[in-house]
Image 1 (cartoon, rainbow, N blue to C red):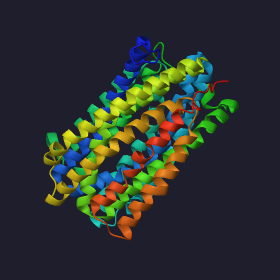
Image 2: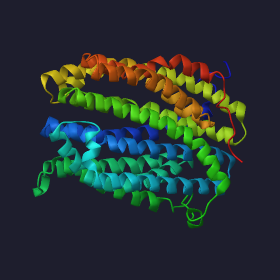
Image 3: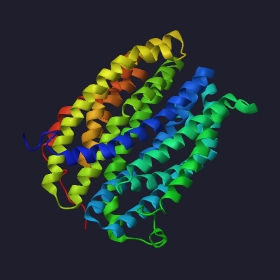
Image 4: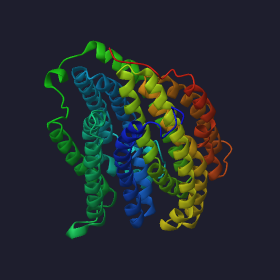
Length: 451
């Protein structure tokens, strides 16, 4: 049996499953909140579902920054955990908390004082703007909390507690979904709150999540931030953090603003296109959960080996991850195709919106192979060794040099059919597969980032 065959290293497979499964489940539970919002609000009215879908794009943009910060926390944290330098690990934890709190506060202010202008970015339909602005005024309070809790959950993953991370996130999701039903539909004698109910449920669940995460960090064998590091600077580690962070943020901005632009294009193509895109996005995000979990697990496991100085072993693990990623991506394509007719007939949409949804699902089946494989290799394997520049370059070229201009021209200049415009928004992930595979073989990602 070859040394790098998938079954040759049982310890590797055991560690991979130990991290992948709970994180994938956590991602699935988080994505199910958006699915629950869409189903519950869609049951009341198509406009409420569309308005909240557009409003949550603000949180999507915030999450670009938050996930960039906690992503670097995981990249450096995994290497220092592998090196067993727990003092440096705590300093990295505190750096991520301070950065996340600062950026979350800015988004909170925007949602409180200019929610209407935020909605105008995505749609010009007055009914959607009004509902979305009301949602943001309440949900904005949750943005103050989510960044901090994500730092705690990321540190649990890095320090070999992925199961506890999944438990906290899953229970938070359950609380959110239950409260969604109570507030949206006015159960137990409460008034029907519609979109505002979804926002209130989000806020309460975030309070629950943060309290549990902070309390849990003080248990034995867990890491909690030391006060002295929260109010002091670790200059060298901060420089390391920023050096890894800036290309991650750049990539997140390219990707996130690009995706936000896609939703804006759909918003300008009408209510049916917006509704269909909202449902397709939920299904797509649900199916991405396993590959996102695999990506995170790959980064942690390979990062542990690189931080410990085992560069050849980290390289071998990367080769195994590539094979697993190809298989997982192919399976997701099959699942997306099988779900297409089921999802189309399960959601209450207009006849035209249902037609568009089916077409979007078919297009997504091709797109998902590229997105899944690229996520595993770029966000998992490449990032774990600090090779974060490639993601930014590939997005600048494939998304902003190809997909966004084509979709914009199709929407505002040539007035192409909606499904053609939608296909343009999906072309980037498929187009960059050969480039990603070529870059993998250069092995620039095999680096020890620790001091």
